[in-house]
Length: 248
Image 1 (tube, rainbow, N blue to C red):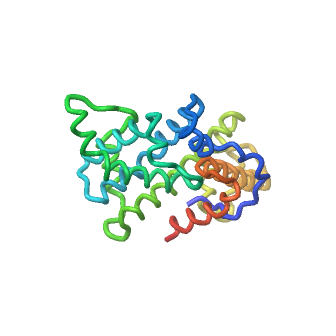
Image 2 (cartoon, rainbow, N blue to C red; image 1 turned 45 degrees about the horizontal axis):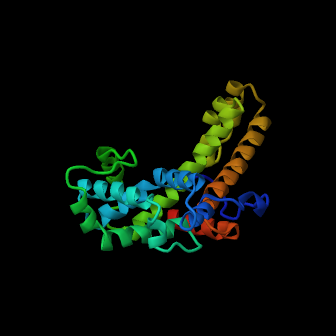
Image 3 (cartoon, rainbow, N blue to C red; image 1 turned 135 degrees about the vertical axis):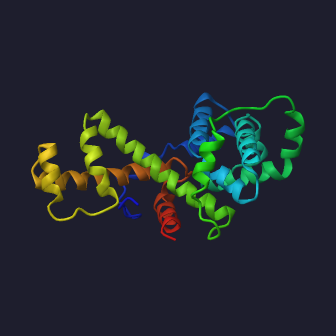
């Protein structure tokens, strides 16, 4: 797991005043292309935690796939958000509550309506999803526990993707690939010297680069988490919550 403290110092709350989740909240009242794009990004990113939740609830793979696809298709319809009354808070909590609402109140009707065809919103390969689900803990976590753990790990993956893209934009992809291992572990004695010879950097410069990599990862993680919250003041609490889930 990346070595980032949940108390990573913010560089200023103002950078998080415009989040995907704040746009999501507006979508219930005034649908817009910006809100739609924000919703689609979050749905494409966070489909697997919901799939894992449905599987742990007892749905067969094909049923979990259909439910996940149809839920997101309905979720993106302009009236759905207003129907489930989004409130300020955390997107992960709202998304799970919306899925529960959908399965409890609409799934039987939707199944009847979709005979002869079905919506396809996200590219959800059943075999790939099942390959991932096979690694879930067998009995330690219930459905909501699996959902939260998968959500937390997805956040970490998205932050790492942001970091990789930053280094690629700075023409430092090779450095990133060499140093990313130190996001989750400390360097053994002499390792920086070996890396330095490959990267044409002094060992001390490698140590500085690792420090900056970790610092930037913390910033990427904060930014990713902020996009799923309505209040930027909640970022630290959410980070602590997600780390507690991963470390459980």
